[in-house]
Image (tube, rainbow, N blue to C red; front, side, top):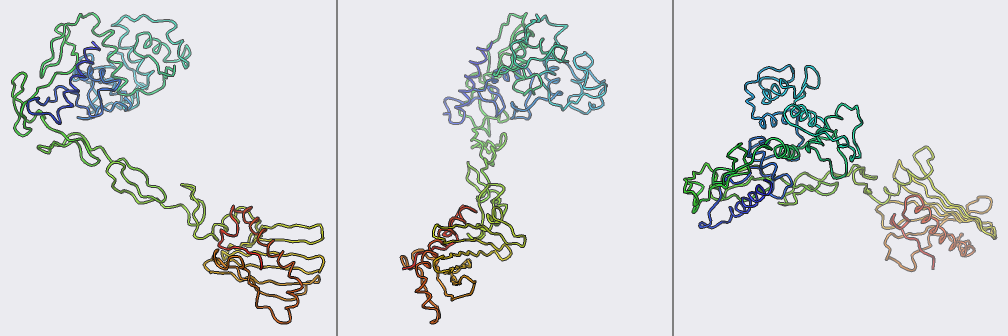
Length: 508
């Protein structure tokens, strides 16, 4: 039976594939020869089972064109399928004890039938939970109740032993799972689990019903199937089992506005039989007949990419733009959404890390420092200081020259947006008395004055002798100031003085 259905489906699928680009002589197949569901393809593992269940009226779609194979099956849906399998006239059953099952509900008769026959008892004495998701254990229990008095099933004692998650004896579903596995209704998952508490999808339900029909429902019938016709499916002459879909009419020189005659049986096929040349669905339009503009199914929907913090959303299929970019979650900091660094200026970036990693003085200022002592008695000290209140940096460096008893102090106020920074140099003696002061220009442009970028000037005439006297220590102080500042800034926030827009140079 499986091979026959498989051949039939391949045949109808191939014919259907030519329906969009077929010549008038080859003809166009009508809808009798294919499943109406857009989401069930010929290569799906459940295709044959869905076809058999659909042809025999057991399973319908979620809507006219959608089967919903991956959707979880509800308890009410499963009972209606079981009632359809049994051929129950659900209109004859009008009494139920469940308060959550009303006469206006589409599943009312199926639940009433199953309860009256002892197939289901409900979640409680008065509730059934019709919209609850059906689990594999619940399915096994329902099928056990349905089959136990009608079919002979050999219960295998070790039926559950091969499953890594087999339930323990005494669980409420132990016997039902043992029955379902022994009956061949549940085979387990590829990972070796039985997943008794897992959900049942609509595709899985179709396969279970298919297996049940093959093993039990028609097992006493030696099927004699009629040949499939244009509008008639292959049907057993003895038991009425439908073994697939009809072939479908084929119409030459068709017109979906006026219809045409079938080239096989000669029957007239009017436009209501949907002899259409459907173009594929787009992001915004369903399948559309290129002759009469009839719509079928639903649009494919946009395949959105994004949006991200910096990029707008766009459809990967039709390339239209959608929602605006999300924007970063901060103006000066680390974005919580994408982890990018977002800072208005390098000063703000350095300040962010100073707040995180430097020492807090408690007044909105933060500092990080380094200190060294040399063998000749010289000492130096560097400090990077950040004022969060004004978003400003100050870099201070002090060099004490043991031989002369003098100290060179460089204070650098770092400001954003200026092409250069003027640094005041102050010279003190051992007693802390200011000897003289001057200025050093630090240019922002890395290519400007390259090789001779420290300019010493603006010293008073009275102090010129001091400049000559301390020239060596002054050069050392400027060099060390650059080294220490880079070291401290890199230690605190991973970037040196150049990232703040400044470059230090040796004196010529």
